[in-house]
Image (cartoon, rainbow over all chains, first blue to last red; front, side, top):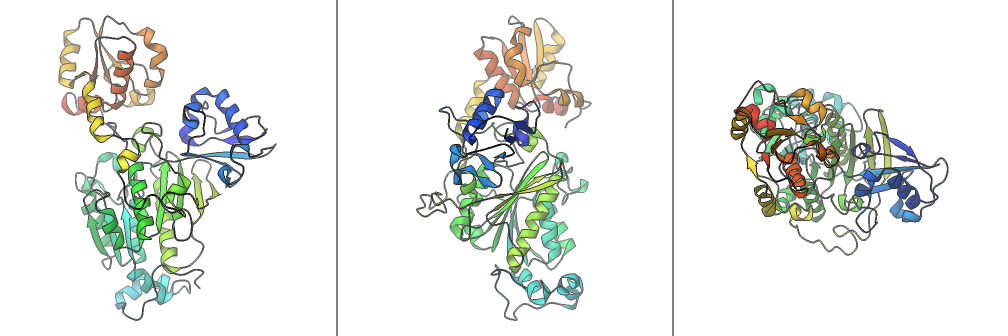
Length: 97
Length: 394
């Protein structure tokens, strides 16, 4: 099964796992299965109408799937998908500092 | 030795070095990749570092040591205890001082030949273009999304390379966004995350040493760009995993449809970045006002008087271990499933560290039908400051 690498900010939603093996033949399927296995992740990966959020980039190997076949990018045994979220460090917005 | 066009043109003899400088830069001068000409380019260079904090500290220190001629520093913050764990350009004796003052002193001590230009006002759509125009390289050491997008857009519009670095807990990212040759930040992240979806260092914590690694990588890239040597991180996203001690690289492509640096740009001037990141400024205050509050003084009185009154702490267990006022602990994320543990007839005061998470908890409780719930304004921080200084601040 393909492996999905989970970045630190999202590990709290995958029970602390930094790597998850999930079935799927395409990137879209694999991610969808990931979100089904860890429902708390859904909000962070998908918008209300089921699209992958644009501040979450998904890479197959070292290439952004946007420049491959998007969610239809084929994945197979041994492939690694990386979720790269945007991070900014530092201060909190709003009231928490 | 140059592998690409240096960012700063080869000097025509106008840049001179004293004997002291020659002695100082000896280890650069004896390398053909830098040599006298290269050191002159560094001296001619004007670099703007945005932020004198976690990333900005190693950045400014190393760029000063390297002999950058003019270092611009942008920061309007004041040195706080919690900074000292990672912002190594500041020391204990700088507590309470503006970061700019402290940074200037350290830079001038390391290298008095560096001219320091300070910008104490926040970077904004009103001043960014003018400030950026005056520099050769922009280095982004900021700590929030709106500023990152502002820095990106202003860099693209003024044609400057933006040396990017960011950190979270044990991971970091670095790249060089130079629209003339590759993608910009928006090509990678067209949209910011909605506020609250990605925790910051203040909420998620960060390994103090982490920005040291990334900030130093940013300094390295800056020097390489100025000298035109090596392969810069243009079109490359460097990912650093401190725990695994692994570096990985992802390919970044220029997005032809990028609204700022693409073929048909729609963003041709700076916008309202707070709005872009979904942080309505005027409304933010209104939301806080909507939540019923009590002060820590009032809390103390109520706790003393007893009656049908209890206090709820919505922080995390590891925070409770550091400091607490004896309240019942239900972390915010668990609250929805644990409402059943709370007595709806009681008056409930809710606190967190500074008042943000507890405000969200109060709203959640109100939405679930709780009537007498109050947010403790300022949280345990305020309690420590105003009521009982024995409670540690963290």
